[in-house]
Length: 450
Image (cartoon, rainbow, N blue to C red; front, top):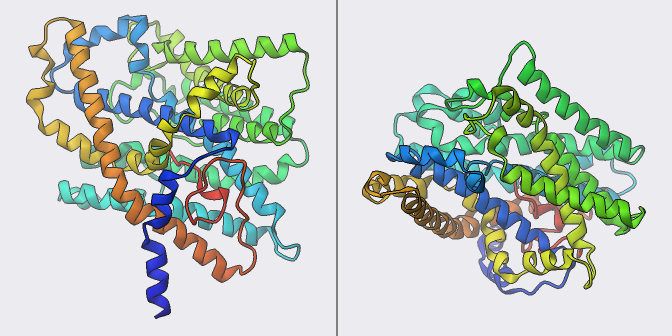
């Protein structure tokens, strides 16, 4: 009888339905907007790559020469937006877990609890994606690449991103995210000593590591990235950790909600953050699609633009969260905290992981996406955006049952295991980080692994 009650609690849809209807009053509801925009940007790039571009759309190659359309090929920056959000939320989660940890419990105990929650938050959905691909690609299991996904290390085994497994290539971000989670407790322990110095050195080391991969003996420049998979530094967690560290710095900055600097300096930083975000989004020189740009300039952009973009996003989130009614950032706060983003943010992880089925469905409708039947760039772009909106709708539609029947039970299972092995030490809910996952036990389960 007890087991039956536990199963009903794991799979009961009530908490999820209440979460979809709940109202938010906290100021960090803007994170839902940021998370949703990041998801939509990444899905746009995947719609372009998986559906539009590879369906006789050679005429769209000229898109790379138009400055106003560069956001179509820079969607991978959405991943760095997710890294910023994860750095913020995961650092907040660990620091709260540490604050409420029993004095007699060890660092190792808290470390295991922290990773246990993260694992059951992301692993079940990845397994479902692997099973889904094996249903479609029945011979994919023969090369053994699927184990990299099972153990959450696809970003370290690039052979699993090609061939029959290419449709799960986007899950490299899940591996990178999990590896950053492993480092988070260690970094947070060091942050209590010299936070500014540590975060600054970490970001600098990230840029230097990217420079090593691009200009060093391996010379993994975008000139060699004409085919999937991209060079290793694109997937290396340490080469992408700068945005994650920016999120951790944002976590510390939001602790006191104060910014102790002269108004002129603050204004300059705000303008630099805006310019950095817009410039990165509309500057395709750093992307592999920017073949019309000088190779050296493209390699330089690939080295510095993603880390800079991560800082700019973190700065923008901070300004939006602490903005007052008379502050120009209050408009961004009003837009990003709109209720229209809530459901998208709630379903974002499942929609991201399970996007392979909408891709398969739209690829099978070849006649709709044959851009050769369209005359001119405008009509071809119209066909692409029609494809994109159908793709997003399909991803969100697939995400609803996946979130309800798999993601939420996984979160609750992690919570139950924590309560069983560490009774009385469950993390308290936090009222300052937006909507916690329903019945998930605090802010630690709000992150999105991308």
